[in-house]
Each structure stands twice: as structure tokens, then as C-alpha cells.
Image (cartoon, rainbow, N blue to C red; front, top):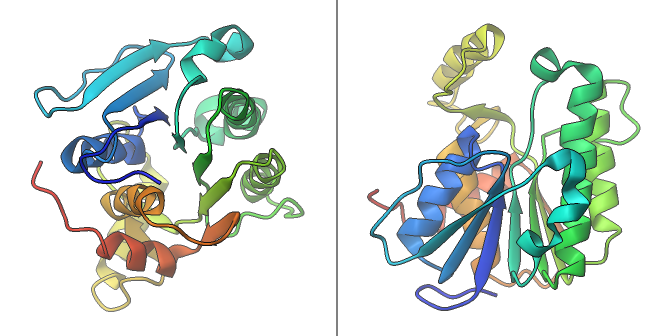
Length: 231
């Protein structure tokens, strides 16, 4: 378990996405780890001057086995990796959201990672007839089977965020559910900042469970237990 201002190391997969960016900001603000490694397919613009050693490891996900060193020596691994079917096609979606995730988790486990924190989705189920939910469920089960000392799976509902890319359907859903969130804040949606705080909190607090699944309401509760940082 990490401690604020303490040592230790973690890695972040998917730091270019909305949740991953929020997670990286949270890690730099709270500083539960002295070293943070961002693992991705390209260089990113990273926060500076926060007292945290943020490193980058650029990898080829199609040849991930050749990058085992990037996953070695971390206490906690945070995974926000994902794409969409509309962006990558059905095969590409499966490759990113299941295969890349599981391969990365395998390398992390072999490299000594004790706690793997996975962002999944509400409704994830390996037996679902819907591709998105089935793939998310398959990834969960495969990661669980790797035998981490701790595995935390977050299943957020619709993510409220400002994306770099415009997704019309998601934008409409965000407007509707963002309004509903005023009256039912934990029912249908969750801000990405809340998910990020819950991910960090899961690493700071012992759960007493080897595998812990946090549904949307639990994400809100855990995220609220962490003071919001001024970044």
C-alpha cells in the first residue's frame, strides 16, 4: 500500500485518455508514489515541478513482450487503456481493450507488481451478447486469474469529461446524464476526476480483499473520501 509523500513506484497505462490524464494529475498532486512511469505508444506532455519523478516508456503494443523492462519494479499498476469500436473497428477494439490490457498485466505481474487497478465498465460480463461489455468482462476475468496480491476493478457508468476527440453520441448522453446527475449523482454517470481519485484511493487504503470490484456508487464514495486537489 502506498502512503502520501512516501516512496514506491507505479505505472499508468492509457494516460492519453480522459481518465488517464485525470489520474496522472491526481498522482502528481497527492504524491503517493515517488516515481510514476507513463507507459504508452507515444510521448506525452507531462506535469513538471511537482516533486514526483514522472518517466515515460514508449512501447509498441503489437510487440509488448519486448518491453518487459517498462513493467518491472512497480508496486502498483493503473490501467485506463481503451478505445472504441467506431475508432478501431471490432477487431481493433478487442485487441486494445482485452489483449493489450491482459498482456500488460501479465508483464506487470512477472515484473513484481503487487496491486493492479483496472478501469473497466458498468455491466462488464464475459457472457454478454454485446461486444463492448463482453470484452470488458473477459479482460476482467483474465486479469483476475493472474494472481496479483490485490486486484481492484472499477466499473464506472457514463464518464463525464471533456474529450480531445468529439464523439456525438457520447456528447448527447453526457448532456442528458450530466443534468440528471444533479438529482441522482451516483446513478448514471461519474466525472473522470472522481474515477481517478477512487483509483488512487484504492492504492492508499487496504481493502482486505484479493479481488475488489467497485461499481459506480462505490466509485463515488471512494473518490469523495479523497480531498480534491488544486492542480
